[in-house]
Structures are given as structure tokens and as C-alpha cells.
Image (tube, rainbow over all chains, first blue to last red):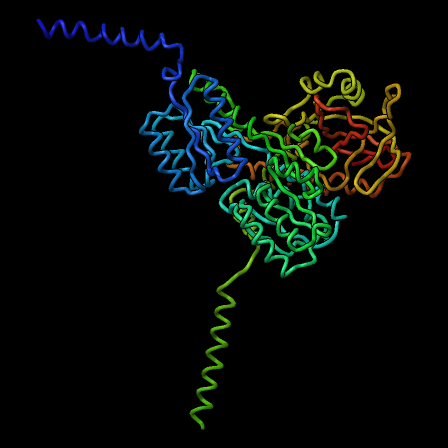
Length: 313
Length: 222
């Protein structure tokens, strides 16, 4: 009898508790948790990406948690293991490596968790639910055209590449070279990786300048490296001789363009990418499956001619 | 003495063999060249573009919007022009449109053929000029306007970008450059091409057209 009463009360109490939780006004626990996994929070651009994704996911009623992979694929795998075990509903993901991160996305997919890549892609089709990416190639085509104009189509130059395992590194470099390689009097005397890192870029360019003191420009695969490169140029007393180009649209580089220190950058939109990823995740969790696998976001070039419209108040 | 000489000969021979082996075991190339080579091993944009060029281009040209319609909508209602005739990719990119028309050559520059304006300028404004690009074509205009290539069909965005690079190379080599050498100011040119429209931005004074077909009455051939 007691057992029968217990059996009757159990579902009733569960119903009562469910009802109570619905009266809380905050529906976050009901909607669930979204993980925001970022390649590194050691770069202000990625901080904006992560924070914007978190903010939009929270606006949409989810609890959002940011994970920092510290540019380390093993760390990223640990995060994915935790995320899968902790019952997250979706992952807004900025991969560390186009190939190395595939295994993590596959694990999430097998666990039934949709993954929305932001800014960086993985080299696999059918695993990520959607990849929201900057159109790096076209952005760097524009920068290449500006580069040709600034250098007057001739002279020696250096290129600082980002992480060798990241597709963005090569999309940017390829876009740039698609233009610049058409001009035979422009000679690339050095091409080295500085891992998208400001300090490394400074060190790399310092050593390049020792071997090639006569370069007239340096093209950097991101703004952090552009700032590092500018420091090396400044230390060498060659700010009038060497034009520095970046990519990202980071605040400090926009200010540097206004001050005449950096020549140009490509304005990516981390906020648009992050918001789009969070909104697509929300649509997916509500049952919508009708959206493209890849969504490129256009990149605008910023130079002294239009920098005022990008300066933050 | 003899032993020392023999030793020296062996040493020199050893160094020579070692240097030969080392020279042929290490191959230095730039990072970008290596990466491009690896990508090209997997994907052949030439084949994909050749298929489009030989099978789909003709049908695409039949859908071109006439230049006067294009020009009129560009000024009066660029949003409608983009929505009705344009194709775009992702968020924030221009709309790319296939256009056809006839114009009289005003001047010929290193990278463009400038045509006489097709319409009177707005009051107080400059006349709008259509410029056919003949060299250094880098945009995605034709890839997007064609509607023949979809980003989701490609393994990664680099492969997708290589399509644009190959289309542009083919256009310069097979369409633009051969004609640019023959043309003169004052001649009339019939063209099919692709142009970008940014509905949110001011209408440019010089409107670039990436040529897909150029015909001059005097020559009667492409």
C-alpha cells in the first residue's frame, strides 16, 4: 500500500517541482547551457569574439560558459570532453587548428551536440552544423591592392604568417599574393610565421631587418603581429621607410592607422560572427535545420581615407 | 707519409659524399609555396572552371540584364536591382550581376577600357562611366554572378577561392587581353560581363565590369 502511494506521489511531486521551476521567471535552466570555446583569450580580438557570443547566447535565454583553449589542441579536447559530459546543448567554437580540431567536432556530433564554428574553419564537411567565417581571401585581395598602391608597385617586402595549421593564415596569404605576385618588381625577401603573436612578430621582424634593412613594407596576417612589427620598425628607426599592413580591425590598429603608424587593415566583424553563431544555434535548438553550412562575412579595408568611420568614441 | 695522403683522400672523398647526400636530402621552399602545392594536389580548380566555361557559360549569358535597365535601376532602386538580378555570398558582400550592353570606347588605360556614359548625369553630378577590366582582375564578381559555384560544395574556403582565381586568370588570358590589344577609342564594343552592386553604398562614378565576352563590329569576332 505504502509502495502504491509512493508510486502515485512520485510523478505528482515531479509535476509540482517542474511547475515551480517554471515560475522562476528566468528560463535559462530550461533552455540549457551553451559552450563558447575560443582558441585563445590572449588576443583582444578573440576576447571580443568570445564575449560577444556569450552575451548573445545569454540574451537568447541560455546559460553561456566561455572556455579558453590557449592555442593548444589538447586543451581544446579536454574542454570538449567536459562539455559533452556536462550536458551542454550547443557549442560556439573557434578552433585552434583546421585539421587538429576535427576530432573534437566529430566527438560533439556523435554526442548529438551541434557545433557552430566562428572565424576559423575545420577541413571537414558534414561535421560542423555551420561555419561562420570572415571572407579572409577577399579582404586580403583588397589589402594586396592597397599594398601595391602604397609601394608604387616595386621594392622589397616581408610577410609575417599566422599559425601554419590555420586555414585563415593561408587564405589571407593567398589573397594577398593573388594580387602582389602580378608585379615582378615587388620582391618578397622573407616569409616567416609569427603564430599571430605580437611579441613573436617583433622578434621575427627584428631578425628580418638585420638581414634585409632595405625592405619598404611588411604584410602581417593579423593585427597583433602588425603591432609587433610596428614596434620592431620603430626600434629600428624606419617608420618613414616601412609601411605595415595588418588584418583584423583591432582597436589599437585602427587608432594606429589614424596616427599614421599602420598603413591598412582588414576589418573583420567578430561581433557579427559571434551573434550569427549564437542565433543559428538558437534556431537549430528550436528545430530549424534550413541554413547554409558556411556563412562568409565580408571584410572591409580600413585606411587613413575611411578610418574615421571605424574609430570608436 | 703514404698513409697520411691516403687518409686525406678518404677524408675529402667522405666530405664530398656527405655534402652530396646532404644537398639532395634537404629541400628548401617557402611556406606558402609548399602549402599551395599541397592544396593543389587535392583540388584542381582548372578542371572545375573548364567544365563551367565549356558547358554553362553560354546559358548564363542568356540571362544577362540589359545595360540600360541595369543603369537605370542602379540609380533609382539599387535594392531592387540587387534582389531581382543579383547573387551574393554570406553577410555584407556585394550583389554580383551578369550584364550585357553596347558602348563606344572613350579611352583605353593599362587595366581598363572606358566607355562613353550611357546616361545623362544626375543634376550636379558626374556622368557615370562603365569600365571593362582588361588586366589584374581579382574580385569574386564572376564566381558569384554565375551562381554556378556553391561554397558548401567545397572542402574548404581556399578551394572555393581558387575558383575565383582561376576564373579571373582565364578571363584575362582568353577574353580581355586579346581584345585589349586590338581596340581603339571611338570603336563600338558589344560586351557581356559581371558587375558588383552595393545597395547600401553610394553609386560609384566608375562602374567596373569584368568581361565574359567582347565583340567589336569592325572585327566581327571575339
